[in-house]
Length: 556
Image 1 (tube, one colour):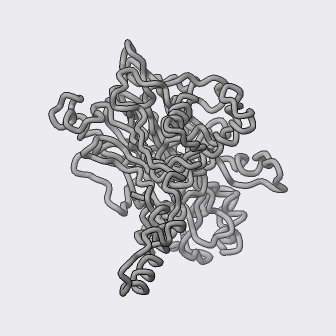
Image 2 (cartoon, helix red, strand yellow):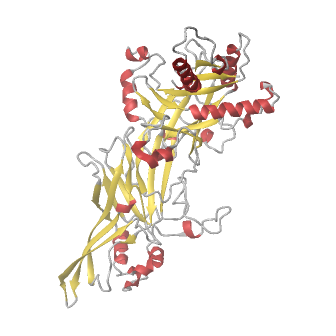
Image 3 (tube, rainbow, N blue to C red):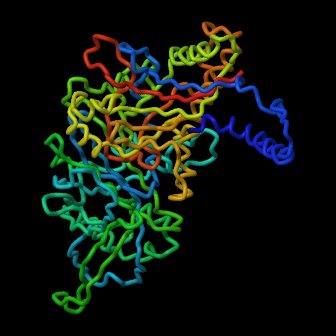
């Protein structure tokens, strides 16, 4: 335990001094037992303590924290090197769907005359490098590929405050239909992913089914029609600016003609754009005798090309329809939105990726009052402890079928242990904790950038992962809690030492956000856990609300 480290360090020089005295006076017959006593600190300058909130004996625990749903559209969805596509139907979250648009650039050199005489279009494939997908990849999904017909989302985007020019930063609420990006009534191609025995491989080339619009689009790419018919300059390396004006990119999304209809089915696929794109295959003819085939031809257009000055913009968009959920307590997304003035308390902790709902947790005055009571308890014998320093603070967020007592988990009296086991396998492997979810500003203990930079050589005490034997997520939030307590003490001092007069807005970062880990914002998994303490008589009570286990030292 860390709580005794400071005291132990204070005693080390004393121990060394005592050893030296022993060596010097070892031959004496009389020893002064008080020698060096003035160097030993008064061990009543601090006192160790430990408290859990809620306490084990609280039948109707106080509301130490308040939990509320929170949803923000300020999650960056552009130029993140991945494209997300797919659809999911779920009893709890309703319907989730994702699609992405991407510019594309030609990969191989196309010399003048390459397409030859009267080229024939044979086939086209969508190139994918699927890097992740959810639990259900056996349900076949149909996708549509559309031509991006307008660049106004880029060229007419309002200039951000304090910026001198437009940028290409977009967020998950980007609406390609409202922006006029594509014509939803005119797909170029369709294709399918998933299905029994057709699991997505790491790298896939999926054959596309072209529409008439798609065939016409290919003829434009082969310079047989359109503005650049016969003009190979558009394929030159220095014409990328003109290329993205002529061929603005593709938009890929679930096919509206074949929607997902079965609950508990579907998934969202992630493809790495550096290795994804469109490939086209064909043949050209002998000019003197068009009935004869001269050559095979092929082109590859990648969605992202490293170092390209133009043609590397991509934007994901995700839609959530919570109204399609079938559970009784459906999420009212209007109440959860960041813009809502008064978001109501919710007894459950929701953690959803893909720009969905997460949980805001606010420490209540009762929480600080209990810590004040710990100080008062330490002063009953006339001591004058003023504050406390935390040596370790752990926060535990419990599954709905879990309990504070592991014995109740093991014997099944806490809930359905098989259901909880399945949830442990399905829920996010790790939770993040942020003081600002929009900017992904973490609490000090969750230094995810530092962790990412140093890889396996660094293990954060924060943890944030599932403790399967206890049926909960566990986070070490010692640093954050000390900062929170210090801010509370400052606000109390500003109030003249009167708790009743504290301006709670001055207690910095009293609210934090529990969400997916920082590098898993687009996870398809989600979790619903026990949140704030509930009162007796609540329809769905939390038997194991969020718990704080705190070791501390009282200090004068």
